[in-house]
Structure formats: C-alpha cells, structure tokens
Length: 461
Figure 1 (cartoon, rainbow, N blue to C red):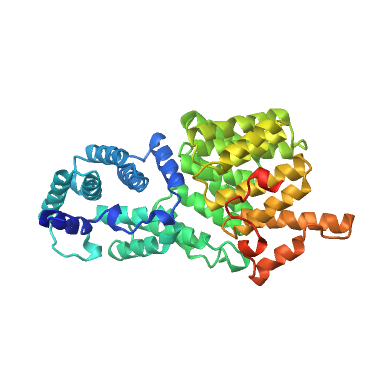
Figure 2: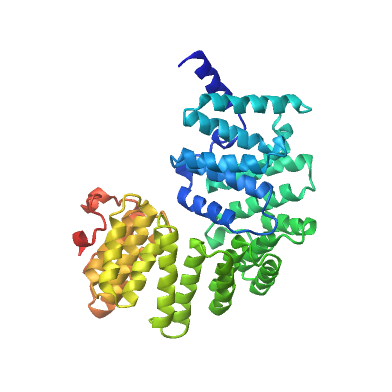
C-alpha cells in the first residue's frame, strides 16, 4: 500500500458515517431493512422530506453497499447530496458515506475530494472539540436514528439520545428517539412474566412526555397503543390507534401497525378497509400486500368457512403480488404454498415448496418456517402424519431461533396426545424427542440426520 493510500485509509476511518458506526451486516436482516426503506421512500407522505428522507437514503445506501451493490449505493448518496445541496452541514454524513463508497469502487481521487470537503466544513465550524456532544447536531441525529439498524444496537441508540438530551432536554426529536429506543428495548422481552407493567414502563413515561411536546406524533400514539394492548388495556389501545390513524392516514408505517393491531383484535373488516385504502397510495408495498392477505385468510376463518374460495383467492392474489414485488422475502411465499393447498391445488403447492427449498438464500429461520408449514400441509391436507412429524422434528432441530420452533413443538405434542388417546402409544417417539431439548442433550449428529438433506420433501416422506 502506497503512502497516499495509507493516508486515505486512515482519513476514512476518522469520518462520522455509517461505515464507521459498527453496523455489521450479520446483525440485521438486510433484505427486510431495504424493503422498509425503499417503500418508505416511494410513498409520498407529509413531513417526510428533509431529515427523515436524508436519513433513509443514507441508510439505504449503506445496506446496498453491504449487499455488494456499490453503484446503487452511489446513486442513493448522490440523490441525498443533490437534495441537501443548500446546506453543507446536512451533508456531513452523506459526504462521509460518499468517500467510502468511492473508495470501494476504486475512485480514490473523488473519495479524497469528499474528505477535503469535510475538512473545510470542520474548519468553518465554531468548535475544534472532538467531544461527541459537540459533533454537529445533524451527525449526532443521523447516528442515533441509524442505530435502529438492528436490535443489537438498541442500547447504543438509547444512550446516544440520552447524551443529546443532556444538551437539549426539551428537544422533540431527541425525546422521540429516546422514547422509541426505550420502546424497542423493552419489546425484546417476550415472556409475559418478565415484561414490565404499564405503570412501571420507562418507555410509557417517555412516550407520554413526547405527546406533551408533540401531540401530533402519530407513531408515539401507536407505540402507546401497543403498550396498552400488551397490558390488556384494550379500550385505551383502540383510542390511541384511532387517533394515530386520523393524524397520519397515509403514513405506511402507522397504517401497517394499526392494521396489525386490528387483526389481533379480530376486527378484520376494519383492518381491510384501512389497508386497502393505503394500497391506493402504495400499490407496490409488499408488506402491505402481505398484511392484506393475512386479513383475508383470518376473515375466512372468522366466517366459519376457513376454505371460503372467494376470500382465499383474494388472499392468494395479494401473496402473489407480495412475492412479485419482494421475491427475497421467503416467509410469505411459504404461506402462499399452504394457501394453494387450501385451494385444493396440491401440485402448485408442492411446486412452490420445492422451488423455495432449492433456493440458496434460505436463512435458518426460513428453513424452520418451511418445515413447519410443509408439515402442516402433510398433516392437515394430505393425511401423512409420519411425514408431518418428520418435518416438525426437523424444524425443532434448528433450535429456538424463531416463533416457528414453538409451533413445531406444539404440533408434535398435539400428534402425541392424539395417538395416546387413539392407540395408547407414541409411535414416533415424540416424547423422547421433545424432552431431549429440556435436558440439553439433543444434537443433529445423535439423531442421525444429515444437515445436507434436512427438509427436502423426498428425503423425509
């Protein structure tokens, strides 16, 4: 490495931007993050211009880089640069990201040019201090919000907002960020007996304070509604959700959260009305199509006819649209295979299952969902109990990496109870298998299962 290259590398590492904030790709679902950011950018909504749009473009660029798409990353950053050309202070993080991306594509001259720009901005600033609290507000803001990148950074995000609040205790943005990070951090606790009560929740206290500062914050009301729902304060939850929807009827994030809440409350028709209205504004949102599909499916169950052809066909249409718009999201496509079987189109269902299993980008959680749902089709639609049990076991062998693990376990125990009542025995050794996880002695090798063939329909049927 030449002296100039060495100097450039050192200068790049000093920059305040996504490339130096330790946002590791192993700690996040890049495809889901990209979809959320892209859909947010595509849906025009009031109040989204300015900081929020710049933050989204910068984070999307970094995700594109992590996926090896540096040219696409450059396009996002150049757009952020153009739209904030009126203020160099707003471009500090963008310039840093641009320097890194240019370096990665081999344009070190341009990379050095952005570093020079940043040096000029710093020289023009009033302070020479390197204290994090005196980092330009725009940089501190972008770093704090970018830590939503992954649940592994929620504590860092909370601390970042806390530091900022020491300087500006009544600032709306910092208080909102602090409240949202507290909400997310508390949300990591899934066991009800370990969850903070509504009265003891620091997130609830901070969210209420944010509402005092900014009564029109729709997402704050959504989060308070979810806190109420988790604490069985359903009437209050509905009040917060309805108000949030009235404040931001076309904010995609708000609408999706409200729609999911209505689905949990089994208000499927109301949820569909809200979601379908949003679809007129965001026809290319795969997440919206998935949520609409789920509501049609549950609406069919609510009607007393879970195989209602009209509702199931609407469900399938929206799942197919979601798959077309976001082919990298596996879970809804596994659901689609199950819906085909519910429509009595077994060949199409099996074709979809095989197609998904052959993909090289399946994450362990995708494989676990695949096993559970393929098992469901075998058990409930094809009558093959043994094959279903084999796949539920395969899902459990991937360990407790998603909620599908407990679904596989629940189904195995259901089969066990059925056989005990019907035949008085356990022909598939389910009890021994399930108990092996409690003892901590289970492993794939002991079970005699090849990880190279896990889950292939032909290998376990």
